[in-house]
Amino acid sequence: GNAGGARPATPAGLAVVRGTDQRNAHITWTRVPGVVGYNVRWGVSPGKLYQTYQLFADEGPSLDLRALTIGQPYFFAIESFDESGVSPLSGTVEIR
Image (cartoon, rainbow, N blue to C red; front, side, top):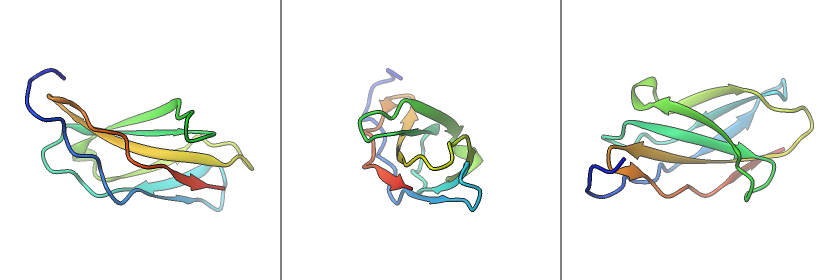
C-alpha cells in the first residue's frame, strides 16, 4: 500500500503449536486494530521464510496450517498490512 501514513503495527503474541499429525500446525497471534490482513510466513530456517499464507483481518487471529513435512523443523513469523504498507516482520517462532 502507498496511501501514506504510518505502516501498521507488527502483530504480537505469535504462537505455533504443531499438531499430533506433524503435517499440521495451529498458529495464533494478537489482533492488530484497523489492519486489512496478515501474512503468516514460514520456512526451514529463520532467514528462509519463503512460504506465505495471507488472511484478511475479518478471518480472525488464527490459522490452521496443513502444509508441513513430517520430521522437518520450521520457523514462523507474521506481519500485518493495510493501505499504508506492511509492518515489520515479527520475531520467529520455531517448531520441531
